[in-house]
Image (cartoon, rainbow, N blue to C red; front, side):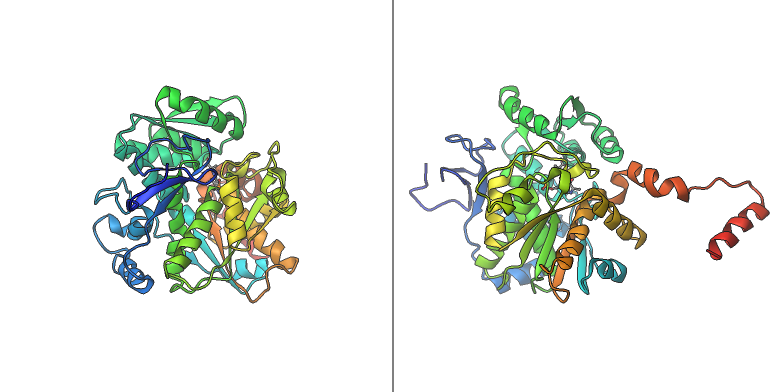
Length: 426
Ligand code: F0G
């Protein structure tokens, strides 16, 4: 269908066949053709500068949910959500500058948007607050997701808050310990599937309708509405002066799609007058989108994925079509970096006292790579998004640096002195 009268404040549209549906339709894919859906909002009544002023008045200090770094932008996210969304609150993540990381990456003006500082330690909380709010609005009886770990931890937390049973499907043996521990701790039912993430997602999509479960993977367009606020909040922190580049890791490509949509709307609705370019970074062993980009997206590429960055160990990204649009709209680029480059970047980020999980470090490894090949000029202003917290993946820390950094010492002042003096003279 298409609306023949005035459209409501928000509605859904299929990005393949353009079929339109109500905002409260529970289907997460198009009922006509199975294509991906997108949430559309009517252009806000207020002009860009007034909207910017409104967002500023809500910043951080208010006791209500508008203090959330997501719901502060409610007019652009879910105007009809009402006053009581399921909000932690989340967002309000720092935009950091660390000279050592910038120097390593070869860019003088490199900022880090640290999404690991969200309540469950990843950017997923921004999408989940909106997704679970929508689940409650449509009367879902239980929620489900497939996950490489962060989505599951976030879903588990927000579902617990909303009082909804949560089921999460994860690839057996492939999820970092911190993420698994959180998911179990928040009380979700964890199903370790004998297969990879792509198999988990296929299973979720195939079985959810039959089982009456509301899908909260990023195929769900409401998740992306929340994730748009990473970009909106970053722009606000930069005084609405867009950077030249925004660099982010790509796995299932929900974030890439959300960033593109955020920029398109911000430009159309007068919040910014220039669109930054997106650079999506994949791990070399899990780089179907980078290969697609190299072939001008003439073909959809699928691979068997393998990388140390388990969060982005994804071979058949669900948001492919939306992400292609985002890259084209922003004149973006997609490249891959090796696991060794990811771990080198992670070490620099960790040793600068910032810390992040491996998939996040791919963004900074990507900045260094794009600078080295001359794609990003050294004087460009760049924001790299750190998507997850350092504690998400404790094994990788203890396996690498930990093996040598942890030293057993006898409980005597002499033994301690030997270590301290040895370190000092190194
Ligand atoms: N970084 C981290 C830390 C992630 O957890 C993910 C995705 C990504 C990057 C990639 O983002 O999928 O939007 O391209 N994690 C999902 C999960 C797949 O299940 O937690 P994307």
